[in-house]
Length: 140
Image 1: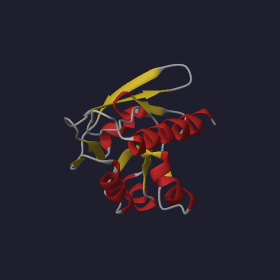
Image 2: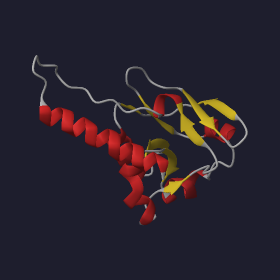
Image 3: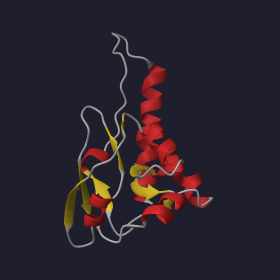
């Protein structure tokens, strides 16, 4: 799984596309807000890392709501590749700054479940499936 910075073609026509990380300070950045609003985005490039403090008019607690605002042309944001693969193919969203990879707050996924004394084999099987599938996706 990879996280991507993207925006809609409509937003980019209105506001222009960033050409470097520091340009994000001039954009409406849709931020992740769990547990707190992430205002500093970190990126890794081929030879260095950069961070930028971003602002925007929306702070959300999940990738799907961020995707919805991206498709509506509200701003730019960071979402997982599996969620927007079809949108990228259909050119509903455009990947921005493809030589840079978002990291830190956007680099992990967690499976939360209620523990039981015996454990739940279905939950364990699902978690094992996620681990195997996501490992395969990130290694390709």
